[in-house]
Image (cartoon, rainbow, N blue to C red; front, side, top):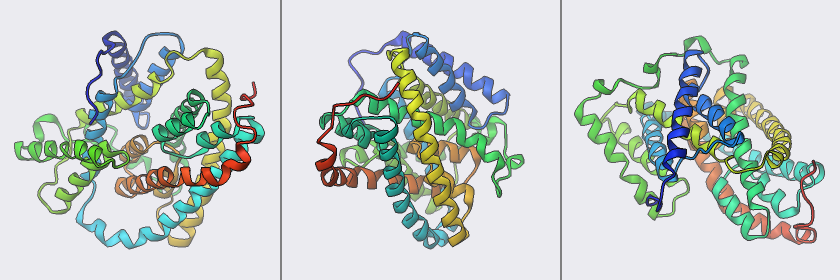
Length: 365
């Protein structure tokens, strides 16, 4: 895990968490899907755009992502092993989705948004936020626009997918538990032994980070949590209050990314992001329907598995909507690993054409 920063903007942190908690609780009272994350994201985004000082330090988000990883691991039950064979086709469909989504996004950003080649390529990738920003900046692209593009895409997906699910065949919104208990047990309900086992899973985060495992702060705890749950050592889950706090922190972290950006730049990026997100979601739905018809796998689970959101964010969506979280998380992990490994290779093959005009055009107003 990364160490603590030299200094923390406590005022920005307190403001972000205060606004995030208030926004999340309001959405919770209104029975909004993924209430604490969506409420926190909306409240802090609005504050950041208005010029209010908000910020969530990376170590705090990491701690809460560890909680999410442990929660995801608790969803791995022994009966899951009987279904692994069904995932082969859906994972193959994921490969098709990545290529189709990246190609469609690249076409849109080059031809419609008029991005330069480098910025368009690394913004179009449907995943790998941090890696795409770093690679794109190193290659000469506009790393701030790449970061904005990915941040806005994730936010738009989180804002649209949970609500769109209400109309999906095969999804029963009435079966959801809208209470805080639906997120997990009460703090006092978890036995001391389960507390110790679940807390031990957090130790896997620094190990995964040291091994350079992509999204290691989530994947490491998830794998260890899954192992102890599959072994029958515990059936415990992190308390609902802790899961709600994780949603608030992750949502506030997304909203805080817009702090310091000029309204004009944000508006320009937002117009581009709306079109890009709509295009990627269209590719998501087409691919998910095709795999559903081919395999009979759950359409809601396939849509969440292919949706172009972040691993932590889409895993939270799956947990909140009670849609096969292990299936969704596994596909997003594979997606991220594939993009991180293959995107630089594909870039070297493509850069001969893109490099001729890289860095020469700005996004259209």
